[in-house]
Length: 91
Image (cartoon, rainbow, N blue to C red; front, side):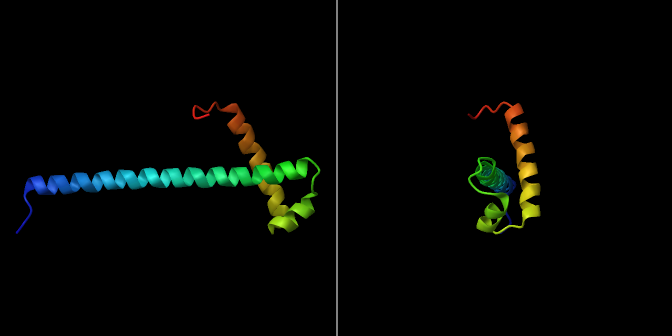
């Protein structure tokens, strides 16, 4: 038996609500991944900047080549500056 217009509308609304919920979950996941990546590179930068380890020693510990770490640290510092310049209402 075919669905009535009311059933079709209810189904479409349910699907739309699920899609919105999934889109929000994806946005949350993406933000958490970005935050974890930022925190990781902050820890690497802090260890190197403090003199606790040399860059080569940090690279050995985390398993990345020096050039990759150098580029990531440059990107991290730019992100840190951008975050510092942008007020965050969640803090």
